[in-house]
Image (cartoon, rainbow, N blue to C red; front, side, top):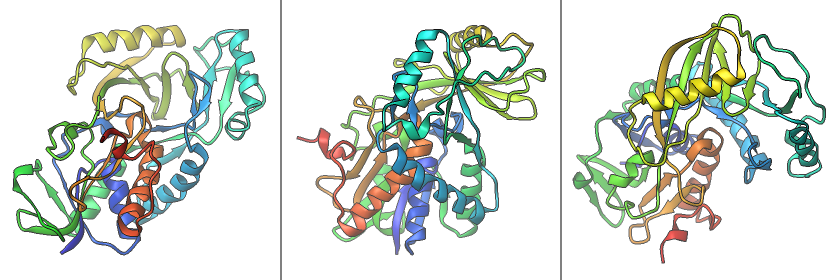
Length: 346
């Protein structure tokens, strides 16, 4: 009998699986790779909400936990997927510069904001007001991480690629059984697929579709991630990820021409050099109405648990939220109300 069956093999599922393994527990992961928000994401980690110039909640704690977690995972899998890179917030006016200096005076933001305006010139980008440099930023190659971890699980005989059939789950007092696979607990980390989960379908997971482009721009030669009305992220070999859109009605993972046109229009306002669109990606982010994660234990079944709602900041949130859920299950540690799924259960 395993300690945990985990449904979902993207960032959230990987984070919990690895947390359990690091604590000497056994896991079995089931995934059909249908929820591709992790694969379609840019994978950027950034501790500051730049639109409102606010730190993300518990940003310092999440960063301090995230970095060694991913470093250890790179070593374990013998692959590179974590790429630290500066993030430059492009200023559009003197007013935005002043907002930056005001933000620096906030003790919660001081560790993440460089105190001096950056006036570095990048070919094809007009930046008369300079940039603000955000510290402790980077991106994960989510495709490399997910594929690498799946291969590790397969090598251990701990991965099943199939669509999870909820009607085949047997829940007993001291275990769960799925098609002959038996475990003490089951963790659902399905992303937007949670809406088809009979145990958690009533929780308010909204889902926000996001689309981005992969472009090739040999003359751009960026060494930083530029953030303006969208981000331009260099990923090597003159390739850049550009995004992202936010769509609240369409819940499909199909790329759209409307999103492409929106991204191209905004990109043309930022860069003035030639580029070629190589690919377009789309995925539905698992977001909640209060923009907080959904984690915790089912109110009636103490061996059924949820790790979801990581939204646009899954790279930063996944390891820390996996730890919070694991400690709640194994050690009875209380979780903060703002992330506990119980906040939506009367």
